[in-house]
Amino acid sequence: MSNRSPGEIRDPETGKFDYKEIWYKVRAAFAVVLSLVILGGGGWFVYSKGHDAWMEFRTAEDYIGNGVDPVQVTVPKGATLRQISDLLFAANVVKTAKAFDREAEANADSKKIQVGKYNLRTQLPAKTALAMLLDPKNIVRNRVTLKDGVRLSQQVTALSKATGIKESDFNAKLKDWKKLGLPTWAKNGAEGFIFPDTYELPDKPTAANVLKLATDQFSLVATDLNIEDGAKALGYSPYQVLVMASIIEKEAGVNDEDRAKIARVFYNRLQQGVLLQSDATVAYANNITGRVATTNAERQLKSPYNTYYVKGLPIGPIASPSKKSIDAALHPADGDWLYFAVVNLDTGETEFNADKAGHDASVAKWQAWCNQSDANKKKCFG
Image (cartoon, helix red, strand yellow):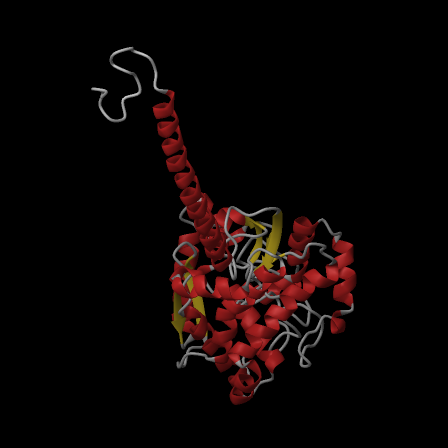
């Protein structure tokens, strides 16, 4: 009988390998390895199928990853979140509008998405697309800003500079102003109807489509303020209210609360048959900019815009009024004032008076302020 231990692969007496024992061990090891391979392969198969199913579930409504190709998407003025999601879906930025709607509903900041053109990528996760829309760095800035209280010729210059379109092209379209989509009650041209605001320019700007941005915005504001019914309630036409608003815009200082008071002064003068005597209308009639005061000679100009010369309102607007001034023209303050004067151009401090003596005292304060320094004189007299 051998005295070696079971499983020992050398004979302790001879020291030789027992090849039969070796074969048993190799075969056993192979069986174990084979079992592991089978089990491992089955596990991998299950994992692979599970992973595919999970990915299919995850991507049924939404993309994953960092996007593919650059793309630009424009968010128009007044677009709702639902409309934005449709735009993103149409541009293949998001896989479904539903995915973006879900992310937007979960993020209160989604209401802060700005109007404009955005640099995005196709096939983005909806959450990433929303984050990019909320990041101002992704906005493609191609805007023009039309200032409050400037005349039409100045707006044309600003539009030409922003778009590269010749001023003559804009003026040609403005000459045919009845085709600009102005309200039916518009008269005497487009002055006053090119609404002051900031606009995103079209990809291919033309004089016609750029002007349409501003006239369409005017229509929206006029509708919002209900200018037609408001004017009727005051006993004036919508056009007369617009003319009044343009004068208020030019006469008002920095204090918005004074606008309704200025409106009341002019309405009181109209009702009493007193000349409006607005220096702002004199400046427009004489094509003057850059100063507040006017001269006696300028005030004698026989122009339908000069309210020292014509009784009542001028023939048309003298500038583009802001929404605040149109609102003031529709809702004048209560008061018996017939005069007003700005006594400090820096602070906008304005005094209102019902009599000439009080007004003369206010004018004296204004003149004193103008003479305090060379800088003040320049602001007053140019």
